[in-house]
Every structure is written in C-alpha cells, then in structure tokens.
Image (cartoon, rainbow, N blue to C red; front, side, top):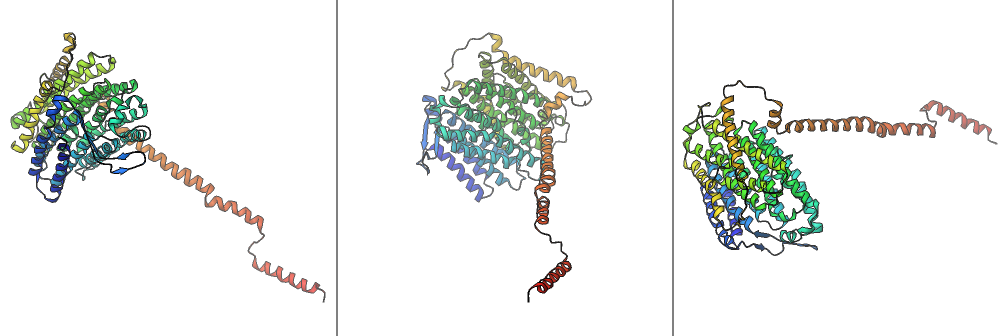
Length: 591
C-alpha cells in the first residue's frame, strides 16, 4: 500500500514519456489510466475499515539552516478517495478526446497535456508540505493556460487563456503570502502546521481564502471560468470536474483546522453563498450551452465554499466527489452535441436531439437531474444534505436564502437545457453522428457513477451519521425548491416561445456580462494606459525634462558663463587690444 501512490505517479510520467516518443499510442494511454484507476482502489479498503493516515517522506533533498526540504506524500481519506476519482475521470475524458480531437494534427500533444494536468493535480492532493503543494498548484495553472489557449489562432482563446492565468495569479498572491508567513513563524509541513492551528494568525487564513477564491472562481474573481470555454470541450470537462477549479476548495478542506477564526468562516460562508446565487442567476441569462454548464460549476463551487464556512469540510468534499462525475458527463454530452451540430453551441439553435442522439440525450438528462438534486441520484445525497445542514445550523439568513434561490435557479437552467436541446423540432442542420464506442463508453461509465456514487458513499463505513430530527417542511425544502425551478422553467418556456425577440433589460445585461466585468476589463485598462501616457509624456517629458534636463542645465550654465568671462567671440578686437597693449608696454618700459 505504501508504494501504490508513487507507482501511480511514476506510471503516468512513464506514459507521458512514451506518448512523447511514440505518436498515436492513445489506446495505450487510455489502458494505462484504466489500470491505474483499479490500482488506486486498493488502498481504499483498509481506509474504510480504520480510517488511518499514512505519510511517506524521502530523505532531505535540500538542507538549510532552518529546515530540511524533502518530498513528502500524505495518504489520508481526502487524497486516497480523490485519487481514483481524478484517474477515473481523466481515463474517460482521454478516451472521449481520441474521437473529439481526431482531426487535430497535434492530438498526441493534447493527450500529453491532459496527463501533465493530471500529474499536477495528484501533486496538489497528495502534497504534505507547502513547497510540493505550490509546485502542483502552479502546474495546474500553467496547464490550464496551455489547454484553454489550445486553438491559438483564435484571438478569443488567447484572451481567455491570459484571463485565466492573470486571475489565478491574483489568487496566488494570497498563497505566496501564506507561504512566507509559515516560513517565518510556523512550519511548511502540513501535519506540524495543523497541530499548531490554534496559534495561526488571520494573515495566512486570508491568504488561503484569496488563493481558493482565485483558483475556484469565487465572486470577484469569477469571470475567467466562463471565458475558459474557448478551449476544447474535453479540456472544459477535465478543468471543471476533478482538476483545476476544485483545487482551491480542496486546499481549504485539507487545511480546515487552520480556519478556526469566526471572521474567516463567516467570510467563507458569505462569499460561497454570494457566488452560488450570482453564478446561478448568470447561467439563466446565457444561451451558450458550455457557458451555462461553466456557470453551473461556479455555483456548485460556491456551495462547497459555504460548507467550508459552516465547519463542514466533509460535506464540501462529498459534494466535490459527486459533482465531479455529473459535471464531466454534462460536458462530454455537450461536446457530442456540438460536434453533431457542426460546432453550434447556442441552445436556441438546437432541438430534437433526442431522436438523432438518443444515448447522449439520456446521459445528459441523468446528469442534469443529478445536478438538480433529484432523489437517489448522486447529487441528491450531497446537495440535499448541504441544505438540511444549513437549515439546522446557526447560519445567517442571507446564506440560507441565497442557497435556496440558487437551487431553484439551477433546476431552472438545467430544465431549460433539456427543453431547448432535446425537445421540439430541429433548428440546425445535423451531421450524421454515429454514437460509436469512443463516445458512448466514457459516458456510460460516468453515468453509472452519476447514479451510484451517492449510494456507494451512503453505504460505506466512512460516515458516522448522527440522528437529526427536523420538521417535514425543512426536510423537503430542497426538493420543493428543485420542483419550483422545474415548473418555472417549463412554464416560462411555453409563455415566451412565440414572443418576439426583445432588447435585454438592464438586470439581464448585468448578469449576462457577469456584473459588467467585461466593461471594467476594457474601461479600467484604457484609463490606466491613458493616465500612464499623460504622466510619461506631459509630466516627465514636457515638464521635468524641460525644467531639469538639457534646457534647464543650459539655462543655469549660460548665466554662470556670462559672469565668469567677458569673451564675446570678437577675435579682431581682441587681437587689436592685445597688440596695442603690447606696443604701449614696450614704449613705456625704461630703456
């Protein structure tokens, strides 16, 4: 068991090297990932029985006066449970990519990037010290930049990739601040840090929150996530399910004992609830299927952040697990539809896909129902438990209200996707899309897990369920919210179907443009550039250089020259004066 995690990481690295040396070995890569997934299931059995934690450390690689830096891996319930999920989803997405990116001349490089992305995420989840965590953290950021900007001849893709890296860099300032604080006052080793958690200052806590807000696209740093849809669909699926965006929340769950401060937990709570309701509202105003699903991810990440703020990291982790499966499935289904409709992503131009792509339509329906929290699908076990926990806790009313509104809206846009894409009549020319094994196999696997993941967690021995009594109305609150959203969606779809297109209202425009985030992107940048230009030209060039530069110097020296000499450049006069003076001197001298 001790050697399983290093074996998995080394095997993925080996697959990466083979993929680099031998083109067109996608089948081998897929098989390797499948094998590694089954290997990663082995340590879960002893974990279920006694919930132990294991740490593996190498001998010190860098020896300093203050501490020795070594490679250290921690194998606890978080890393051992999330590792097979990351492998399972990457395995499914890699298989799907062989079909989706089939016409791409650099498909080999694409698969290699996906594997590197996975290795970086495995480093984040198994790191036992902040140095390793930081390497994995930066790794997922760099790989997301390369994969979002995969189609580099598209200006939008380049802009989106830059946007992702800049927003994450803002968050990374928080992680760097925390790292510096820990280097000076505490320990870089996570186990030692967690034993000293009662002495932790507010500065590293706020740094961790900023890092998680940047990586997990919380409100304020949220606008890069919908823009990231410019990358290929398999990238979106991997990015939004089990790698990049969950890394921020995973960091807070791993270091949760450090976040013991009331101010900190309240900040997490309010930030999470605001993100959840804002992203869900924004999703209802969009028509691009990938952007709707992306904003849905932001909304679910807000729910996870809310649970971290409520001191329920286990629930946040449970939602992270269940969310990974149905979100990856949603993206793969949307990718299949986009290919079928000749790269059409607008849901208003889709329709009647239930008849042309029946299997994909079934998978999309199951994934959407799971996202809504329909009973006994995996999303139900985490989402309903989150809402029940909030209803039974001493939380503020804003958080609970916002979460319930977000639940209604998530049911609304999920139903909207299904009604627009699957029902009605065809509104675009379809291509013949045979649902081959490369398309359906990954989706079938993800669908099975979307249905069973919650039940498997429920029957596992990892939980110690406490009996909570509550009124029936509170117990059914989440279900009522979901049903309200479904009915609203269906009624509004029927009411607005025959209406003429109208100019978007200000609130709709506000949410559609992510709180006018694109406006400050341009307005602030242009105003800063103009001010900088004015300062550099008018203030420095025309004033400072004129006053203190060459002209100022010449003005200062001219008066000094006039004072120090009577030279006027009149050579004849000088010579005449000199000669006359010499003759007079000679005449007056005594003989």
